[in-house]
Image (cartoon, rainbow, N blue to C red; front, side):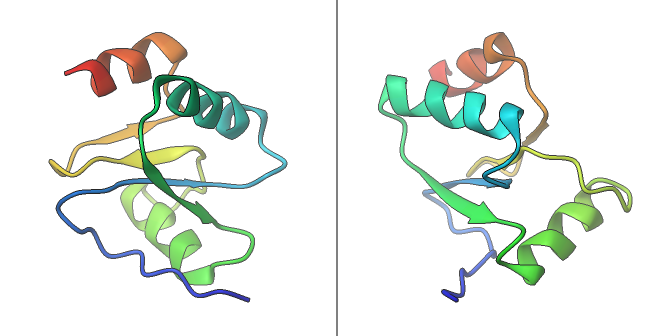
Length: 88
């Protein structure tokens, strides 16, 4: 298992999710199509990542949870919401 540092750095979008999650696959595909770099944290493989999303989502494991370098977070965003965020 590869450990992923889930602490924010100032330059990277972090997407917390799981491969079985259709919303995660959809959000990843949108970022990939737009050429937006991001760090993928698989919460099934990374317990620290799972704890982090529970912390920011009031105890719930809601994915995808996407954390941006400015500290803002989108949870289960629609394609339109995510596209607006990465365009700004």
